[in-house]
Image (cartoon, rainbow, N blue to C red; front, side, top):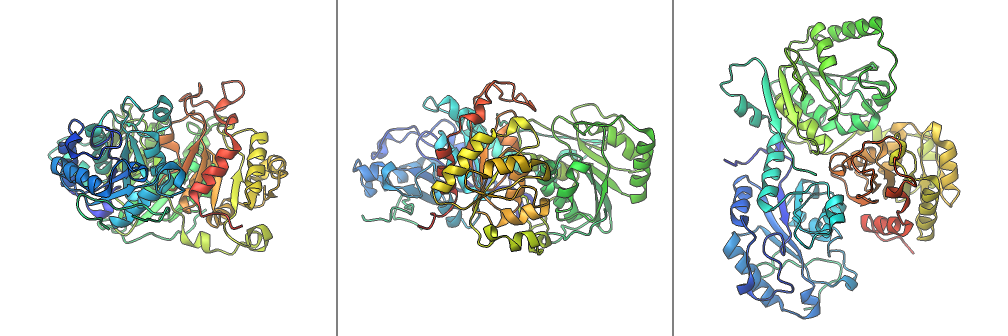
Length: 590
């Protein structure tokens, strides 16, 4: 039975549904209520969402109004018929414009999603948009919402490939929404384990990721009747959800900076219910670990089964790590990993360090190494994956926290002499281009980045190019097209401050994309499909995805492009990047 979930334990407040092809059969330019036919299973599926406490809105392009194929009175009659068959909706948001009208609400633009979120009293990040074509998913991403594609015969294959979340039909989409909602609620796992006689809790959560005169800048609300309207202290986020006392918990994410950043929500969930949180990370993720809220102490140690270029196993170093973990005196450990990593070697060391309770995601049989063995299907977004493990271990975000990436407030408030003193950064609103990536297959070539910079400058944007200390040759080469070269000028915290004042970031699938998400800066994602976009794309921040999602490198997890010419990114048109920046921000002053 579907039941409502408390505010602090849920991902979504609302579901926004396309009308034609998603809720009802697509009848082009329909102004006749008698032609309304719900898709199979729609009423039962929508009632499940209502029973779960989710608000529902319809977001629909209806250019037939602009073209004169039907009137507002006819449109309202059609919507009254939809409600008679499918139940009432909390809001109806309609774009009455045609493609050439220059509005901001016609999907794939995000205006309808923004308006629906306001109408429902929530944020776009807490909304799921369900639709049958790429425009619906693109509108969701551009607003910072989640998008589910439910393909029909008119859906193009490239739209299916580009979508981060695909369901076979509307009932299946609802199954996934409710499953993902329940996955981050500890009550789900308490209910599943009730009465169990086993010392180990075995949990699982799945994801099927892998479906009159009117302003020309605003959507219209046309409903069925009338129009409706080292050790580093870290700041805690929100109030604790209770029960932790001074319970000490070791949390683990030993990987790159981006991996640590996307684990942040799961770590904050643990921190909301624990008294003291100690994060074990590797050297590549240490700079990001220093930025995370909820972390009281940091233990840095490279794990040879995680590092990309590990040193040989050193028994002395392993014994030293066991001693450092034993000195924490932890009551529990939560081991966060990526889907291709095993938590079991570290679980063994934690047992040797005397940690009495250990939770991790593991498809492999853990024997007595885990007390909570959690399982998640491939494809769920990494931050949600972390939140679901925290929930399986009994932790949820505090009621006044949000399921987003975020940094400690003092990081962004800190004075930065480089940032404050650089004329290119004196005024916010610049575009940041970050051409490098930790994995070469995920970055376009320098020439393409230089062309992107030139196109942005020609369009009137102030552009800065960023990169690490080992990328200064690259940033100089790209910035020569008319941007300001800031390569090697900032550490990760400084880059966060630069991104926080930017209009948007143009970047591949690499750590700065997640850093931008953590400071709320929109992302033009030049996303190589070697890994799933739904799992690794920027999370809950306005995003435009560019690049060929159908390229032959898809899902190979290749570190270096296996296809000559790197076609997934080399064919990105700089004009597409300029258009994406326009979608994600206000007009450039002239």
